[in-house]
Structures are given as C-alpha cells and as structure tokens.
Length: 152
Image 1 (cartoon, rainbow, N blue to C red):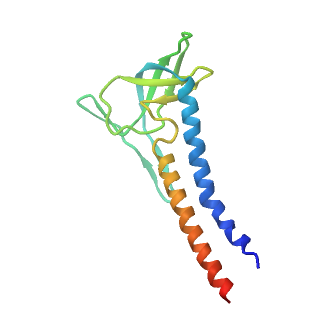
Image 2: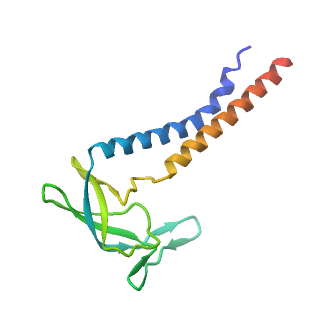
Image 3: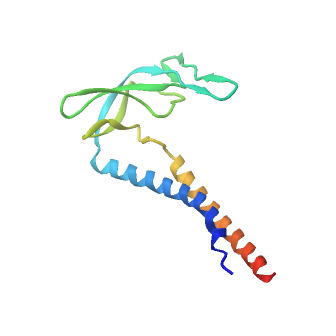
C-alpha cells in the first residue's frame, strides 16, 4: 500500500525553507551589484501597528539628540546625481548619528539596504532553521505513522 499522500503536509515547512533560501539568494544578488554611499537622516516616521482590537503607535522620543523607536527617513544621492528619499524597513530603538550607510541597486535606487538591513534582516535565517527543524520533525513523525499503519 502506498503512503505517499501522507507526505503532503511536508509541503508547508519545505515552503518556509524555500522562501528563506530565496530571500538569502535575493540579498546576495543585491550585494553583488549594490553601490554603497552615505545617506542623511532627514526625518523620523512613527510606526503604526494594528490588530483586531487595538491600534499601537511607536512614539518617537528625543532625549539628548537620541531617537527612540522610529522608522528613519533617509535621503541619499546616487552616483548619477539623483537624490532619493526612502524609509528604513526596521525601527531603530536608538540612533544618534545623522549619517547612515545606504547601499542601493543602480538599476532601481529605491531598492535599498540601509545600515546592513535588507528587507527582512535575520528573520530569513530563523525561518530557514525553523523550516528545516519542522520538516525533519514532520518527516520522522510521518515515517513512524507509516510504520504503525503498515503493521496493521
């Protein structure tokens, strides 16, 4: 009797692994062609998070020149002399410097890596590890289930 259909749930953790590997590949491809420059922090954007019952705001507080919990708005100049304004993809609990490192794609300068943070940061590695562990656990569980079913 074939128990191949029992392996279908493995698609879920394997999809997590695939997405993580794709994000890692995408970041490496970005770094191959990215041009690094310096950008100036020109503003701070408060973050807003909503769930079904509440709306949460990240409040920006300035204490002795320190920015607390804000999405930074960064302006930078490309090698062609064009000026772009983008926001960071993560909040900064504290940032005291007005200059920040920006890497950008010369074909699409709005595709940026600010302060070595590209799209999803470390979460892609956590997703990869979690997907591998989840896949292995599911595979072992499915194999054990198949063994029990084949004895009957």
